[in-house]
Image 1 (spheres, one colour):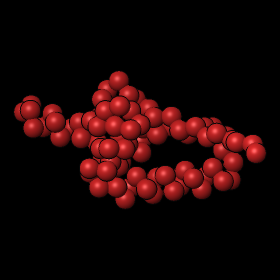
Image 2 (image 1 turned 60 degrees about the horizontal axis):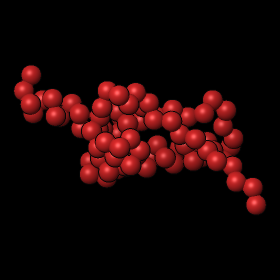
Image 3 (image 1 turned 60 degrees about the vertical axis):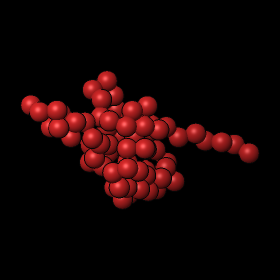
Length: 79
């Protein structure tokens, strides 16, 4: 394997990022909409934006083996 091949395998793609997202087992109707918008948002990102978002979520802009899932949680705030 060449260094270029190894690096390319570490660059995040929307499909790879989405496959790692883990959502709660029970979600409410408003949360379903949020999940759909998040997935659409990720699919529409360019490579630079996706790398930045990956860094924000995981601390790395590359796909690392230590991160097998990215948990999404919802906070319900009461006024």
